[in-house]
Image 1: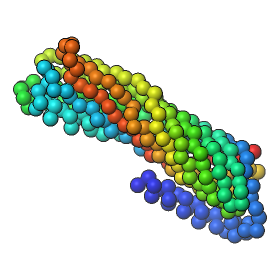
Image 2 (image 1 turned 60 degrees about the vertical axis):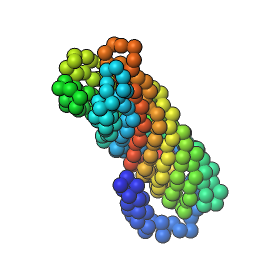
Image 3 (image 1 turned 180 degrees about the vertical axis):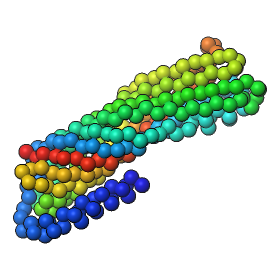
Length: 250
């Protein structure tokens, strides 16, 4: 869906500039050099927990079978994003290649709640899992194709972010616990985009950025203060960010 939206945005941009492109067909634009700018976007992001209950003196196998699908529910949401961009392009004919740094901020804080009764007894339980992150830092090698005022490009490189995971669980035994883990995670970020060069080195740009972090939390905890763990935590995270930016080339 996000890729389709990006394709539509790129098509609209290119269609809108066709008359100007035709008038300027004989000119050669210089895309080489340093650039920087800002972008505003909207991102759909999701954590996919692989957390589970552990068969222990506290949880029976039937409890694990019941709880695991609930603990592994997707935690997702939409957020507004802001990005600071800087990079350098080299140009050989119609081909550009370079390196781009990207600092993006957002306010992702989403919670998944559930409650019920154990199948193995009559006790009630409740659970709440929250995933939070507010920035990403990426450095992506970039390759593109230019034709006068238009640049199409793709980039791929490492990304880093920080995530906080909080899980609260209680039941009518009664027992309760709060697990909290904050982790700096390394992932990968990729982008496809299109830019149109305005006057005086200004560029209007749209892009789609996909970021993936395979491991944003690790750990385990116990519910009844015994020496054996009752929960184990694991999750990945991915974000689909569609942005419009204004870039200045120097």
